[in-house]
Length: 598
Image (cartoon, rainbow, N blue to C red; front, top):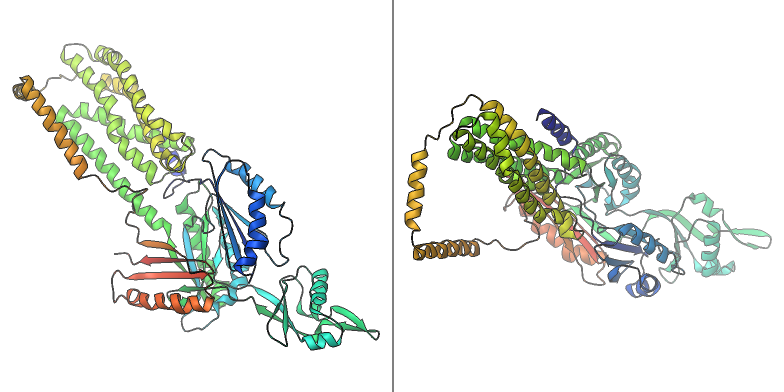
């Protein structure tokens, strides 16, 4: 018994702690960006070729696509039994068959099993220190090079995503009249730039007298100025002769606010089967180091706006308290009916031993400690006592009939173990198939079914091994007699009187079944996928109307929402909001709000 508890304690310290189990959705999402392109262009040049290439992917059930300004998205939904890794390889191979993407379009980005927002355990906002006015969108490179690099080095963090910044680019603005005087046209300039540097961002008309070529690459500004475009009378015509070269921010494609002020938001997404509590502790330490180091020196600060571990700790604490309460109530009910302290304690031993053995089996099965598996263990508390009670009651009955402690333990267990095996097998047969279901619900409740099944199996082993041994040792010299035998006799006689005729028996059956059915209908809870719980956090997705520009989105939505949130942020209205963030980028947007803890 002590060895089982020891292994259980070791496993309990090793088990990863999460909010819910990892659920692998049969989904692959493909996102492709083409800056400043109209939705019609995105559809014709990117979306349709990708759709043609992806048709007929094995196991594909549904393909949904959308095109917006500067971006396309394709959602591929597969059958639940498909191997997503093989499907991913097939999708990548087919995307490589797409003939030619536009020169200034980004490579497709693929997300497997989740949306591009991921399953973040933390959200942060980068904002200026109080009293400082900064253009936060200019800090995109700083976020990528300093902040994201540091956070992704935290053990257990798989990736981070940032929203609200603008990358830097080399912008070449030239006078078409000067270019014409030197005999250089716009396509020639774009072609030369494309052939001599990493990649060209294309060119766009910004007026009657000026054109712009944008470029994102590794070359310095003076290298562009020295670029030879052509020769005139034996002299080179360089780019600086006809154009102005500057480092500038990319065009603004979205807006990001935190508590109404401009900010850059970024999240942290965990790897699978990690201890989220430990990862969050390391993540917070990394943020402290950044705030005290490069971020603080830049006059900025990182504010955490969402912490999933708060809800995890609250949920685990609630389930732990319910588990302890369930154990105490079970022991109390045992004592009420048995009225023998030693007998009650022998049966009660099955609870902790079964729980710690279940922890060891959860660890061996590669499971995690989450609200689903803990709920399964709490649900199994009453079940793990069934076999022990039956064995113990039979041993006590034989002792009361005059048999010795050893004989009663052996014979009592032998008489009932077959029935216990059949009972355990039928119970496990209900829950165990859920472990092997591959759909979303099966993956979600697999840990609960696994925990219940393991606890019940362990309880059977304990009932036919540990309980008889303990009964033989602890009850060897104990005189067993039922002090409440007269009470049970009176109770049995009363029940027999109430059901002594067929009419009375039928009446009682109809009444009990009717009351049970009526209470079940009256108390039936509303159907839902998962209960909402008491999490003081809301994350919502925003769908702006097609064609809405950044300035319009800021004026008609972001500014309006920010103004309406002020009373909640200041505490003038309830519930008081601790902080919130909101971002809109083209046809997609999101908003997170965290209320103050009561």
